[in-house]
Length: 297
Image (cartoon, rainbow, N blue to C red; front, side, top):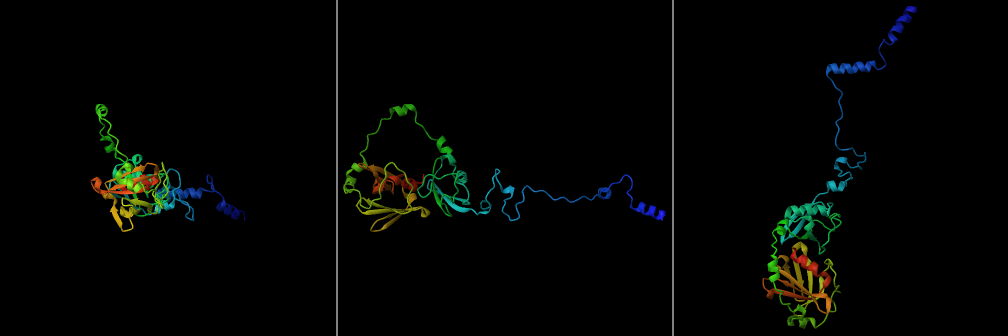
């Protein structure tokens, strides 16, 4: 019995110099000798999101701030930039900031962002920190660009001081409202349906046509701006003239004395003064927006 016990204890006793993990160690040694290695899971630069997909991978985050998933997957939409009466096509997602659009405009036109004045629906101030969607832009929207390239600025010729000293001031022209040609219309007074004018103010164009004005013959006039067609529609009781804004050479305006909240305005359709279409009692707050929208430069 003692022999059997010794034999049994020999089978179960631990060998000297070995521990409980010796079998694992031997297994690893065997792996080294056979050349086999334990497969490793490759690491990626993107942190895995939660199981519900709510978290965005860190590789799609910028500057440490989590980006919006909509910004990543949103498709770009076509926009049109009008500069110096030429059209430039741009494609950006509506989630992009206005600052990104300015960079794209610089690439197309050469006008730096700091020198860009963008007009959309007559509004000259567009916040760079807002998205295109927040500013009301949509697919096919047209924006007018007013500005100068760096080359234009560098090539600007400044007359020498001697020439500036020799130049004599020109005789002051008679105010437009005092000219006999226009007094006949102005003497009739402000039309009853005229839009209230605001002096020393600059507003963007309203979404509805401008009405309550008159032309040289005293007939009622309304102006409708069709930016998607690059046209201005001049409507009267008899007909509506659809004029391409690119064909208008000049826009002239002057405040009416005694009624500075209104202006006289002329749209020059040809190369001579005889081609000017005169409009009276234009609300002063819309004059700059009308000029910038038509000329686009």
